[in-house]
Length: 141
Image (cartoon, rainbow, N blue to C red; front, side, top):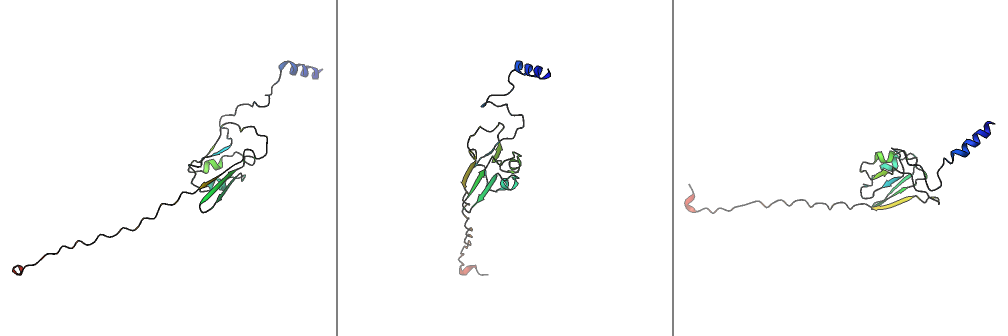
């Protein structure tokens, strides 16, 4: 008889789950997807070094660098964001979007390195200031 009571209570109380596209709100302090701002990035690669799950891949070249992120591998620990001194990485406060294909949320960005400033030419020393004084025969003493 206990099973019948349980079924009756569940039937009366209604559904407790949300239908598919809806989802519960994220808790305060939730760490979601990592976002990359190429304008703030200095190309140091510390984020890839600190990423324990290897979801961030940093490929430097002489003139550019490629920053790639795979959220399928990410553990959302936030170590990459904490280690970014230029604040180019942030984490979303909401749940990731719904996706249907594998690697759909992957992100890759190739950024050109800024050109180094031109080398300054060494300053030219000023010419010595030589003033010629004419001596007259009557000045000798």
